[in-house]
Image (cartoon, rainbow, N blue to C red):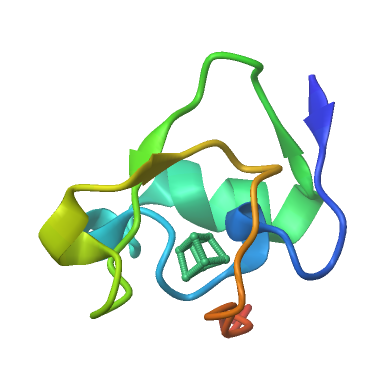
Length: 69
Ligand code: SF4
């Protein structure tokens, strides 16, 4: 399992793009853990046109903390 630090994609509101509300991604945000093969599209307006795909432990300057219900 990958351990996700604050500031990394797994806890970013843009991780998973349109699928960001899925149970899988919510669990990643809550537990800060993800399987090593998880790769998701980034929905940030500046990254999405490039079809950027990121792992939960990637990051960029557009990081926006996701709300954890
Ligand atoms: S690449 Fe940047 S904007 Fe996209 S999910 Fe990761 S931290 Fe968020």
